[in-house]
Amino acid sequence: MDFGQRYFDMFGREAAEGIPFYMTYPMRNSFLDEAEYERDCRRLQGMYPEDAQKIQVLAERECDKMEYEGSMMFDEYPDRLLFRMMCRNIYRELREDDGETTQVPDRNDLFLQLIEVMLAQEMYRRRCRYRRCRRWY
Image 1 (cartoon, rainbow, N blue to C red):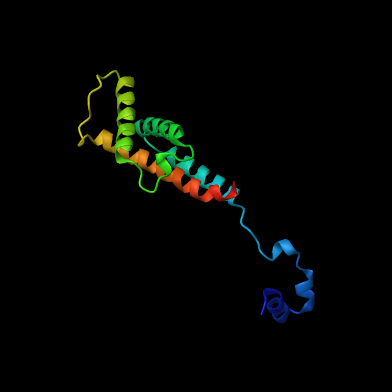
Image 2: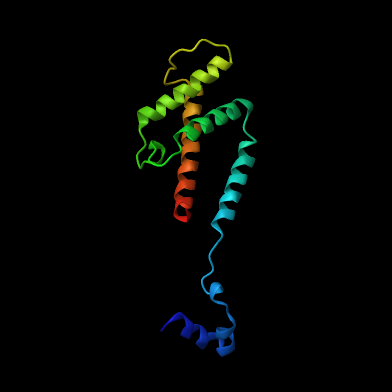
């Protein structure tokens, strides 16, 4: 039995004839959902401490460089070496802004670990947006 027949049986003839075609299969507006996700993310990022906001800006800049079709950022298994190089670039840039001498960071440095977490989160957010939106382009 097709959908139209079931609808007719449940609600009567006038209900089946009165529905426009576009309402039979309602589609959610994904672009508005995506904009709401982005606004919510920005609201929460606004509550970050000052140092974390600096890291966030640099993490977004690094991800902007990597956001193109075929990028390692969108691979199923991103390259760990390139990811760590991106983190060290952010680390060096932050240390140079503070006027400190740049050195190779220790893997146990909590500041470097925070950078890694925030960069991974930014990459995850962009990967999710890419998966949700690419089917509409």
